[in-house]
Image (cartoon, rainbow, N blue to C red; front, side, top):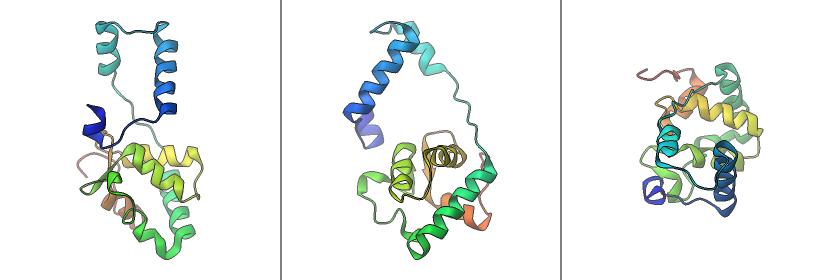
Length: 139
């Protein structure tokens, strides 16, 4: 189940959004097995602006000052999965700092999701400020 895998559950608003998107995309209230398979097999294309993402981390670091290095350390346990954070919870933590726009947060999340697995390595996030992060897999 998704809740067990990602250690979070969807809010009522998120569930409603997903249902509405399915209805728009498939013009139906239910999906057939073939439609679901096609949806799941659709390759996600990761696009981002690296310069904007690095600037966003700089803006966040400048705004938070000394608190920047502990941005994720005081988060609830559900945020952590070892040394990584799921994409959704990464966005929640960044958004709660109130320094970046939603567009900046989305771009940063795409930039940081280098393995395209929906998880962001926290160490990689802090390496952005010292130019040690490479958004390509295996680097």
